[in-house]
Length: 436
Image (cartoon, one colour):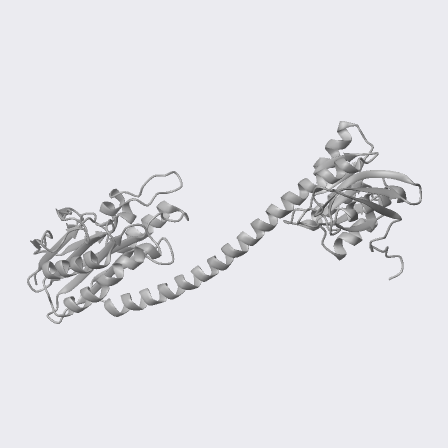
């Protein structure tokens, strides 16, 4: 294209004069460069005997200066240090070169005709986006105001004119160290992203398996409303309802330590045991004992699951309950007054051996139309943006409403106001019919 400046690297007339270190022939003690066009000596640079730079991270450096002698000096020194050099003689040309191929460092002259170094730097920063490309100003300016303007435009450092090659290379070596650290960080981030994607796929699979297990164990039961809101993709809460062959309604509420996958795994062994034994109409006491035995066998020491087991017999109008570590379920009358609280009287499952385990249940009979509610501590402990917990009061206030289950959910969502709950939330309400 006509008028587009070339960004190709130019060779110089500078030749190295090597001097080997007699004590260690693996390294050149120094490289003394001489400009063949002027016979002027240049500063010495540490080099490896193979001709490669001592530094392991070679950089691609864009040098921008409208003075040919300055370009030649810096280009030669940087190439001798093992770097790839691209040159530009104006701010406009620098922008074109920068857009055409990525560079690691920019050495920018401040005073140039057309687009000056400060404006070119400002535009380069817009082009780099999130990628950090260090920009060093090469300037004879000593006014602190000019330096401030350059740094505010996106520059990172200054190298004064006339250029001290030793100082320039020292700054480049510092940038090499940063570049090496950035590369390590990039690789670490790539590894973390690979791990994250694999973990995400594992979570999707585990979530699908968990959903199928719960769906196979639970069923829609008349007058029973269930709500489970996990804090992560996988829930550490387990909420299942099932109707037995004799017409009794069984409900299992389990709350494992924490949330997510580590919390979901411990509740999995409970699902099959509950489903099979509830189908047969087994007693709450025997179900609790069986589930405790399974968790005691499978879980590492120190892990446990808080569990509430409920059997509701609509014919006898009897509730039988075992509560180990969960908030107290409530039996309330039609006006929302609490008739009875079933406080936790046992330890959570998975702690005690079968000989130590207490499977004693608590029973209660109702006569008039009533409502039974149970929930995990994630409901009452859910905090809003001000750190205020939801508490029990909104639950009690909702129990007098016709649609208590929906009212509690709406009240909680209003309380959270778009914020995520810190724990899994489970809620079950049962409408109990009175005597005919």
